[in-house]
Image 1 (spheres, rainbow, N blue to C red):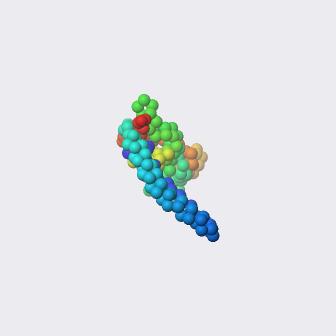
Image 2 (image 1 turned 120 degrees about the vertical axis):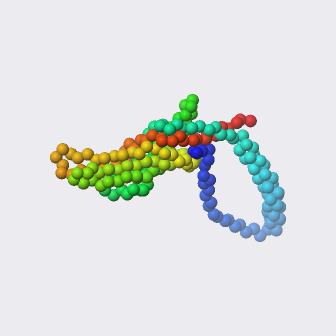
Image 3 (image 1 turned 90 degrees about the vertical axis):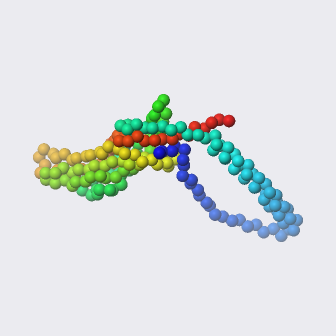
Length: 198
């Protein structure tokens, strides 16, 4: 299930320590008092922030949607492929060109979502055999939250064509930006957050 509300936590820490030495006893006392007061105030502030976060989470609910089998996915290929070098199982990366919409034109998956797949069939070109590539997609990733869902798509097959006077077929070449559009073979479940205003 693709969850448009889930976002992998991304954290970054920048270490650094600054030490200032003061040789006046009154200043040291004032500093100690400030630290003591900060120690009393900080936990109360943290508890208040925690309660606010829990309240906000409680107000967030989700609406379930389902993208029907047979839905067309407009995909742009981002992984160059060649029937001369590709192997079955090689990863394939694509990008969703148009959003997936549901009932009442609700945008379920925005354009720009990453679509991941694999090479399923490969055949190198020969004198009497065209270069052949077949691929399918199995994962779609939300571009904003990073949430992923499994998908099943139609098999997309490409074959090279021999020129009229050529003695052999050329290899099948797929460049970055090639059309790799497919259709869903099974429904896709999507959850969208609904925030209730207080």
